[in-house]
Amino acid sequence: MHCIRKVTDDLYWVGANEHRLALFENIHPIPRGVSYNSYLLLDEQTALFDTVDWAVCRQFLDNVEKALNGRPLDWLVINHMEPDHAASIQEILLRYPNARVVSTEKAFMLMRQFGFGVDERMEEVKSGDTKSFGRHQVVFVEAPMVHWPEAIVTFDTTSGVLFAADAFGSFGALDGRLFNDEVNFERDWLDDARRYFTNIVGKYGPHVQALLKKAGGIDIKIICPLHGPVWRSNLGWFIEKYDKWSRYEPEEKGIMIVYASMYGNTESAACALASKLVEKGLLNVILRDVSSTHVSHLIAETFKYSHVAIASVTYNLGMFPLIHNYLMDMKALNLQKRTFAIVENGSWACKSGDLMRRFLEEEMREITVLDEKLTLNSALSEDRLPDLDALAKSIIASMK
Ligand code: FEO
Picture 1 (tube, helix red, strand yellow):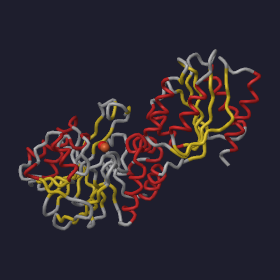
Picture 2 (picture 1 turned 30 degrees about the horizontal axis):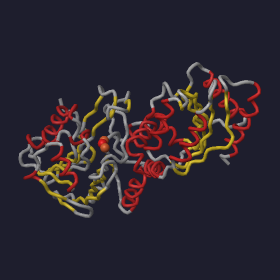
Picture 3 (picture 1 turned 60 degrees about the vertical axis):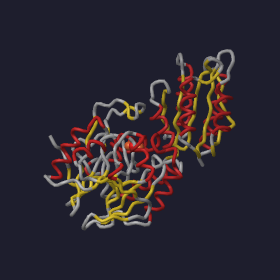
C-alpha cells in the first residue's frame, strides 16, 4: 500500500521508513529507525530525486506508482550513490524504460561498479549545469565528500527546494510526520541528527563548510534531505548547527566524563570528579560508561561538549580497549578543538594516562590536554583528593 506525502503542490515525498534495521551501515544502532527519502516532481516532465535502500524498495515502488498516477517517469536524478539511496536504481529503470538518469561522472562510474546497466540512459552533469523539467528549472552543485566523492545537491530555482543528499539528514523514522514543524526537533530529533552528522559526515567538515558557502548564495526555502524531516521553517537554526559541527566547534560549555571501569573503582572516581565539578558550580556534566554506551553516542556527545574527561583503567599494559576504540574513532572523524582531562587507574603498572595523553597530543589536531591529572592505584584514596580537587579546578578554569 502506498504511503506518500505532499511537499509542495507538485512535489511528493515517496520515500520509506525502515524500522527493522538494527544497525545503520551495520555499525550505528538506530532504535528509532531511519527514513530513506526520495522525492518525485510532477512537472511537464516527471523527475524522481534519488531512490531508497533495497530493504524498503517494495514500499518505494508502490509510492512512486501512486504519485505518478499513470504518467511515465522521465528522469531519475541521483544525488548520492551510497546504496541506502541508490540500491533501487535498477528496479526503477526496469519499471520505467523511458527514464533517463542524471548524475555526475563519478556517480556513473559507481553505478557501473555496483552493476547497474545505465550506459544508454545517462545524462552527465557537473557543477553549474542547469536543467528544465517544464516550469521547474534546477541547477546542480557538486558536493564532493558530503558524504562520498560523487555527491551533488540539486537546487530547484523555481521553488527554492534544495535536494540536499546526505546533508541536513538525521537518524529516526518519520512515522507519518514529514516536516520539521510537525515534530519537536530540538527535543526529539536533535541528538539523533547530531549523531548522524558526526558519525557519517563528521570527518568531512571542510567539505561541508565548502557546501555551506555555496548554499549561502542561494535563496533556499525548503531543504529535502535523504534522511529525516524536510525543513520548511527555521532553516537558519539547523544550518547554524551544521556550521558549528563542521567547524568542530562545541555547542556547549560543559563536560562529558567517559569512564572505563572493570570493577567499579574507576567509575567511583569518575563520579567523584563529576560531584566535585558540580559542587564547584559546573552543572553541565554528563557521565558515560564506555562499556555500555555505543561509540556513536560518545562521538556525538564529544562534538557537543567543550570538554571531555577520560577515565581509564590500565588493561594489558595499555588503555582499556573500548577507550582506545573511542579515541581511534574520534581521530578518524577528525574531531578538533576540545580540552581533555585524564584520570588513570592501574593496580601495579599504571600506563593508561600517558598512553591517552600521547594519543591525544600526537595523533589529533588542536587538542588541549590539561596538565593536572588524577592517578589511582586500584581505587581513589584520601591522599589523592587534593589531585581530584586540582583537576576539577583546572577543568573549570579552562572554560573561562
Ligand atoms: Fe545516507 Fe551517504 O548515505
